[in-house]
Image 1 (cartoon, one colour):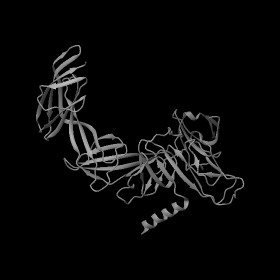
Image 2 (image 1 turned 90 degrees about the vertical axis):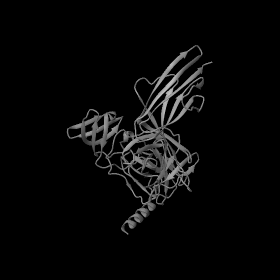
Image 3 (image 1 turned 135 degrees about the vertical axis):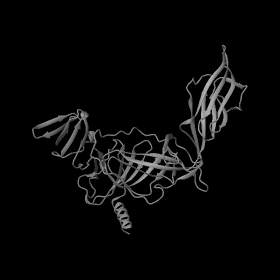
Image 4 (image 1 turned 120 degrees about the vertical axis):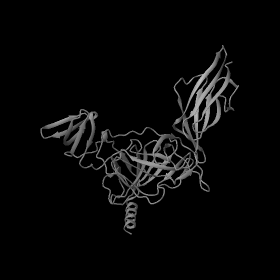
Length: 437
């Protein structure tokens, strides 16, 4: 009952203040939408940015109420500090300075000490700390001259910031030799020094082009205690919705961002899969592997299909793989993958499947070449492993005198499928004739 009461209290307080909304882009950066409902407007109204770094040129205000919105860019992250504010500076020369903020003028920071005044070049500052963050007065709203200054006028405004980012993370946990559980996650990060309470968050997935979003602050403010999040559902986001050529994920619960923090939550429900595992032995034209054995590449193919449900979409992210005992077994980046598409990744190399590639009887003439290729492939494990021998060729090439069945997959690729039992060694030979005419 107490927990329910706290959740309702949080919800009502958020709705009463106007819920902040954040659209976080896939390539870092976010659009923030805020609402300020003042009880009285004097000559102007300071609109809070909650310590977030505002990207110049992106500030906007809704058409109503009428009025002018002006943005004053805070240089080097130093806001309009009151004279006498205690400040702690750490310089590149490992100097530690504590004093009072006096002024910031002509690209110079003036800091008061008991024995005088220090003039500091901001480019030499590694970071600064303040006992208390100052009031952020960078956005100013000026109402029309004839409007009532005491009227309650909600102001909807927003801006782009480089403080927030999100990334997709995936886990593939093997439960047996054939089965695995695939789990999508998302990670939210606040790299800035601002604090935003109870925000409604939407994640944009896709290849979205934007101007470069830079961290405007060159210094660091005090660290926060962490990021609060309330989640009772199996996943923290609703099913993705199509948005033009992209997709959006709307988080189910409000998020509180505290400075310099991140957290991870489930993006969708886990899916049980039967990944197709194959080991790839590769070669190129008439090149030899030498006397040192090579290790085959592991290739996993994931068919992400749900029976009776919409197939999941996979935003670009990182896939981490764990064995049956939960031990980390590698990670690999994955691209944006539409629903119903097969995902193929190569998370690493086999420890036990090794091979050598040797060129025999090579003959080269002016416009032709011919040689015999030999592979020695050894499975040093106690398991049966599926193997694909994959060679690349260029020119007009023909295969003959093969020891195994070959498949010409394309104009440049030859494949030989194999199956090696535990402890088995296989020798594969074929002759390739190439014409460069």
